[in-house]
Amino acid sequence: MCQDCSGDFSKLKMATTGRSSSIPKRRSAKLEELVSSLSRAYNESISEALERHEYNFVLSDPRLPDHPIVYASEGFLRMSGYKRSEVLGRNCRFLQGPDTDRRTVLEIRDAIREERPCQVRVLNYTKQGQTFWNLFHLAPIYSRQDGIVIHYVGVQTPIAPHLASGVSSQTQRVVSETVKELVEGGHAIGTDSPQPVESLVNLRLRGGAADADDIVQDEHVDTENDEDSPLVDEALKEKAALALRAVTCDLTQSSRIKGDLALNRPIRLSESAATGVVCSSLMISLTRIQQSFVLSDPNLPDMPIVYASDLFCELTGYSREEVVGRNCRFLQGPGTNPEDVQKIRKAVKEEQACTVKILNYRKDQTPFYNYLQVSPVRSCSGKVAFYVGVQLEMGEDGADMSQETGMSAHAKQLGTVGVVRVAVRSLQGSGLRRTLKRTV
Image (tube, rainbow, N blue to C red; front, side, top):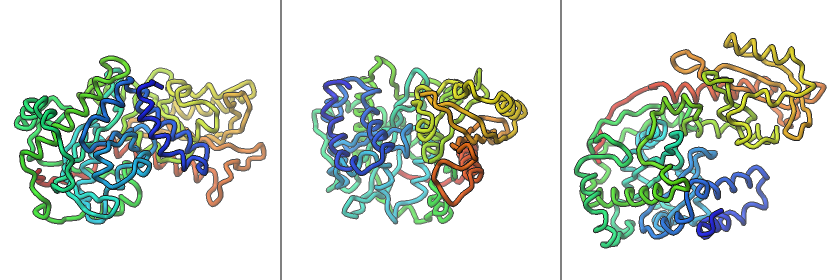
């Protein structure tokens, strides 16, 4: 880990140290991922660069379970009333409350789904339960190498004056002209084409990208009149654009690999998927599934694994980096029955599902019986986009070794397959569209 970054990373460790002793090993590994999320993407100057900003902002990592916050500015902590230990590792939804407009939440999710910037006006809540109107800007930071979203930057600008953080006049003078051009030209940060401030917002209801309880709530979308929300004047818009521009510029200039990070998408989302990159929206859905499974792409040479769950890594002993990009055959060994392997190949060739009890091998070469369910996952066009392989360790007598009760092994696997299918189809389809007038 870079030496100058140790200050900020140590804050994250200190914030979570008190909880780690009572948390299972898998949770501790996740905390390490939170710590390394910044260090693997940015150089040693990032800590100092972010700490000097007076703005309210967070960074979140869509490739970690539940899209958690990995950095929170001092301004954000003062604005929200939360401590750093109460923020890091959590999804940003804790700022929502009973009167938060569901349409606005869907609009943010839509932007994450499409990996694009967005600007909304949303009612949020402090830790003390106090409501405040927030002019929220979301912008992705892309990798030039493969087009994946490294982080999302979320800048919060409270509309209520008593909650707003101050911005120094010196900082405003440095980027004033750039911000003026961005605001008056109607450009969204991170895009090449102009976008009007007043626009028609396409909202899509996505089952795969939402929690189950959110899907139920979405059926009763709040229809409150936008007249209840405050108007945003030009000065506040300029302040918000200034904050986002300053933070995103520091992030891209602090790239660990010089020139690797970008505000604009370097390649199209479809082109990124064609190289085996799982989009961040699908990644968020997959990380919620608490089963051992992998996702393979049959449209790539040798059908490599493009996603492996945490429980798969625990079961096999391999790290995710050792798994992604390889064909599943590395789990086979000298005792693996060739007939079982042939059964799987035949099912894949015919685009059919199959279930087989097969002898596999962990990284340390210890064998285990794997009750494997392989199923095709089709896109909304009907084409097979992925194959999902769900693993369940079985005893030699066929007993489930997972020590879970209440469901049969086959039912667990079918449930996992179903969730993956919903996630893939909903993220690739247009879904249910509704159009409404939004005024910022």
